[in-house]
Length: 126
Image 1 (cartoon, rainbow, N blue to C red):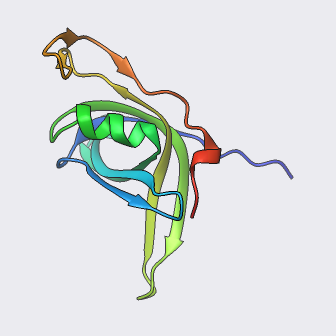
Image 2: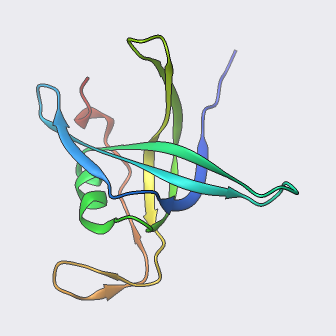
């Protein structure tokens, strides 16, 4: 039976992203959480989602994002069981689009829209 696991979210970063290197290849991993407003229900609610970004895209996210940044995240949902028996759910991002109206790069130049590249799965090791 075929399956499909795809999620597209737009929200604001809850705090600054955190980057670390993992695995034998020392692959970069950027983690952050976003708040997504659910405006379809009568009672407005906010969904908080954990996001992980790998490789070069992780470094791009660290350089460009900060608390409050507006992003579009496209990826797959993954759930892991923790040592204490609880579960951790996150979106493993394939694409992160920086949606802030104006962003400044290292040269101080502003850009209206930046999209990370598709993640090369061969860069990711566990």
